[in-house]
Image 1 (cartoon, rainbow, N blue to C red):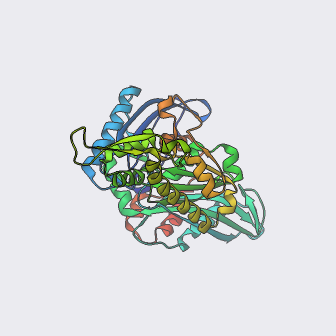
Image 2 (tube, rainbow, N blue to C red):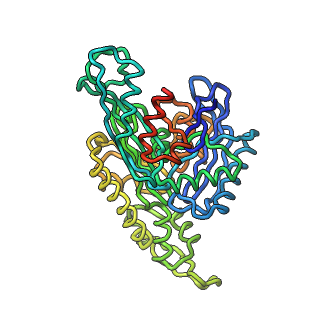
Image 3 (cartoon, rainbow, N blue to C red):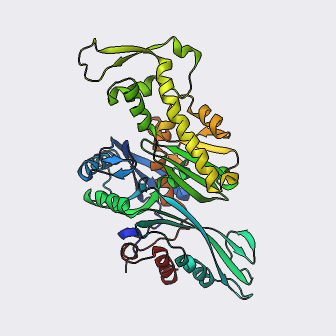
Length: 425
């Protein structure tokens, strides 16, 4: 009998050497598909890339099914053409639906005996005690650590002796409606979802080095419609959050501030934009086409500093929100002073320096790591999420997935996690 993963997706298996894995990043401004071949030691080599301007997507959620289907289909087709392969199964990111982290601890007695798989199953089954709204869908259930008789930091308690076993689990949920819409749209493109991964998790897997994951750091992914945050510590993802502000809001601010069409606002942001002003910006001027003016005479000339003064407040707002969310999360100490900045909107000049100033942390720009075959055009921060989906596919699986038919029908879905764990582990 085929075991099913979340909402009808097949239970993911680690791909074998020579196998094909495909990642589909459905973002607010672009849709990207990357096809890769698995090589030795779980490494992957990219053999096909396709990307398309996203239509029908806002803040990571589907708002026009047909338009989004067209974008996804075009990106997948381009990747298939480049790779010379036809794909059926894809790993898909979840950037909409406002993903929320739920950390909790479950404890069971072991009465001085050796800890077995059954004890771990019993501890995980206590997940039913956590209740969240019926409009939420489970995306991840990640064991992040064990404790035995109060001794924390145990990676694998099997074979150890004690009286009480506790397991810390990081559960991530998102809006059930947004998840269903994404699944339906992908299915209409004749694709099966192998696994769903929240965008901040994928970005962190792609951009953080092992020491950063172990010692503690945050990955901030600045996308078009959202900015996501992930915190890693002791090798595990321990917290995520999503802010519904991104690079598209900067473009809108420019269009309104300079009364120019959005397409010209995006172009000026890419060519002349900066997160912080310099002395030379007053002397450099920019021609700004005006909304509704078709003739060449319908342009204004403004100093570059005027453009920067529009961009900087919005980026400051994003980083202020990130700092506030980190402080409220309770994981700020685990982050320490290390932050990795990635995503397409992080590529504006001086964004790293502005982030350092507001967050008061050491910041570096993160690009996809551990992948071979990505060319310079596709190896930048804008492709971090898609690259992370591929790495998720080949990592050592420790995650606990949930059957979709149960997630869709019963109440108290985390209770269903416990039921499934007892039946499957």
